[in-house]
Length: 244
Length: 237
Image (cartoon, rainbow over all chains, first blue to last red; front, side):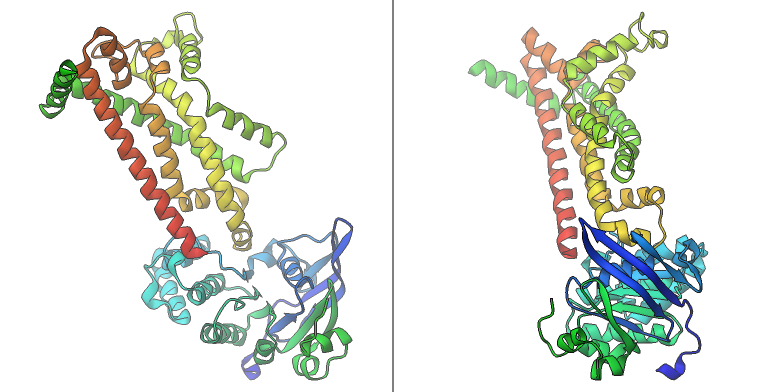
């Protein structure tokens, strides 16, 4: 899979990012560079700051201090327009499956006929061809998450953030989504994904960011982090020990 | 008791025989209330949606004021509209007093706060759910308004029906600004009040039955739409 990757766009660097609420530090990342081919998986216990970091990277949350940069310049509207995010709980518009995709494509200024073709392509990509006219809200959890990913991919992003997209799904649904993620990565989309699932990290990750208590405790090659972690926090998390 | 039974059977006959006077009154009532609700929708929905998504100083005060206006006494609304439209009032030159237009204006004043407040509530809840996703898709706060209005359409139709229910059953304001003039501004509620006082119970009963029928139909539609909206929400949960 790695051989297929020609060039991954959107090198992301976190510089001195801090977020605190009511005097408690929720996120404190002095430096983090996501410049490998990816996919990058962010691992860590609940409350480690994984989702917060993801939202900072996507510009949904502005940090109290520090900044995120992409391709050498602070994150701006152009960068954000080339990013997409999929949330843990898919938020689908109260419309049909096809209309959810059409919403994004229309905003991109595509002509009706071009949109129709692109919707058909996307539905095939996600295995949702037969559901085009169905209400998006009536999809199963796995189908809904696949549609959310397709809608994100319809933006043709260079970076795709995913916040625990398979946390509520069974193994079959998870496998379908992992395949979609790997295909997107293979096409050159930078993948940055939060997960609790160590097995998933083994299957998908090229590099892993391990977090605890709002800090990045380790970032490195997936094999190295998973098989020979450098930090005590990583070792305990990966061995299934309770990490607080 | 026999007199009541006789009035009741006459009332049924008036409805079933298609009495021209009765149905003219029903038609005017529906026209006035439907127009009033449509105008209220045009004003109340954007205002409610804007209050749901915009953040500015005094927003909370405006919401409280709007909610309070939902319970504004109809006779006071009638009085205020009367003062505005009367010959010596600021809009007196328009000569709208004692016309169906005056009744529409009064109903708009009564219904708009209901539509706006319910729209604000519905859209705010949906905006909370959609907020991050829409921002992620590059949709600005302003551009999110039509998206939210469209996706809240079921609940908004319910709000409009609630407004229509209020408008069609209204008597105090429309009798002040409409004057209850025969064949001009006489609607169901004002006719019921007048005919009852005159002892013409058959016409009053016939109109009352139709009014109750409309109220039941509107409530049935509200229930059906609410159920459908809940199902949509449950499917998503």
